[in-house]
Structures are given as structure tokens and as C-alpha cells.
Image (cartoon, rainbow, N blue to C red; front, side, top):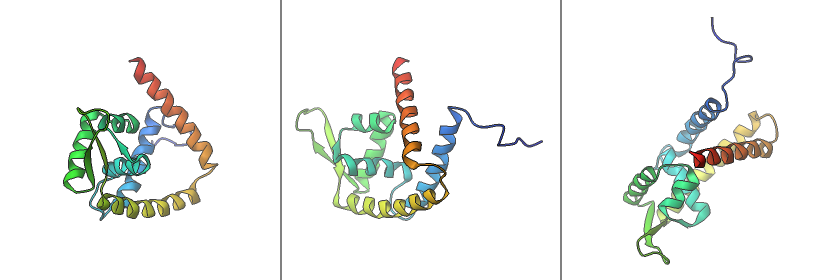
Length: 149
């Protein structure tokens, strides 16, 4: 017998995983043909907002392992989407920023993402800001829980 999704629902850990997988699938469609992957787009779109960041800050902000971020940076530098620049306050560290090519790629993908978000809103029940507020509370709780470990 198949389970009934009205009575059996994913819990506090599984549901965010499912949402991440589904949203990731949409982002894969968004970035198709753009030279970068969905995960690389997460990093470049965050840099488009932040301007410059250290790998450590990117890892923390994006909830990724530093080794993963370092690998992404290496790939994006090779693709000429990012460049490393000297950190003005710490000679042992560096900052990364988008190149002109990275800005162009990000702009293209952001337009496509905007159209995807508009379609999503057509299917979304409830206020998107209320949904985001709940997700931000979950994010904060997860970060605090991880900090306690």
C-alpha cells in the first residue's frame, strides 16, 4: 500500500532536504548552458550581493565546508568567473570577487532565476515573506545547534 502524503509528511530534517533537492533541480534548469553549475551559481550569486569575500566567510554564509568552497573557487577561477585579490588587512588570506565574465554570467542566470521565481509564486500558497521568515528561523536554529556540537 502506498502512503498517503496527507497523513505522512517529511519531518524537520527531511523536509528541508526535499525542498533543497527540488529547488536545486530548478536552479539546474536556470544555469543550463551558462558554463557554471547550480552550486557554483550559489557562490557567485552570493558574491554578486556581497562584492568580495574570503573563502572562510563564503563557507560560513553558504553553510558549506571550507574545502568545498575552496574547490568551487578553484573551478570558478579556471572558468574565469572569479578572481582572487589580495586581502587588504591580512596578507595570509585573499578575497574573491566576480570577474567581468562572472558578472555577465550571473546577470544572465539571475534573469532566468527571476522568471523561475515568478512561476514558483504562481503555485505558492501563502505569503512568500512569511515562508522565508520561517525558513530563516529554521536556518538560525540549525546554525545554533551546529555551534553547540
